[in-house]
Image (cartoon, rainbow, N blue to C red; front, side, top):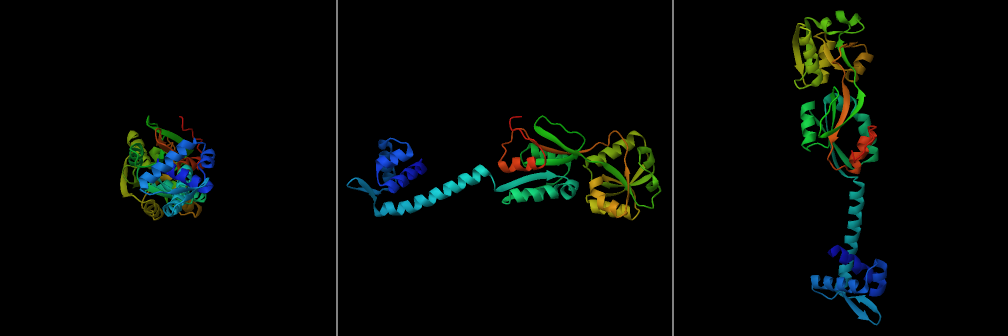
Length: 295
């Protein structure tokens, strides 16, 4: 309420007249008089004195006017900052593959539009990310999964993400154009960490077809997996985007993994009931998502 009184005080100081200030503010003159009286009661001083038809500031009034002007400027700045929501933190949970090979160009474009927003990328596996988004610990998640649905979340498919088996160029499978489950019989597998959705899919498919295999290595790091394959230590299933450079250099042979279960998509998830700032909406629109807050 005192912010309103200070605004009225500034207008009276500007015009030197209650009537002119009331007209500028759209108030009754009696309301302006009452607000100035309440300000004087609050500060315990006389802020204005009448000289003829004019109201002049006392020494106390002159001091208060300096603060009132500063408060007004800060209030306007806060309104602009809050309405634009151009500052703050945007938290995104995602998997290593997408953080390294999908998000960077989008993050660069976003920084150009929202230079004062701090984007926090929280790595994790899909179950962890989904739970954190639902609990409100993350603003959004970008996951790599088969088509996903949850009653509490908006889910938007951004694109299909092909998965491939990679082997060293000297591996017997390198000459093939594609790989099926039975082709991996007795192969040494180099796997991502437990909790990875495409790792779980691969093992489920192999077990369903009763394919014998050996888990040779498990890593939580894509680079380690790729280097092991390059050095002929086994075969791995990875998203194509994660090995594009190694394929280009001829360091690994890429083989599509043909199975109905091997359909994975990069998907955006965010809570249905979450309030969305301009910075939030700006990011999902940058991903090509047509957003409707009323969904």
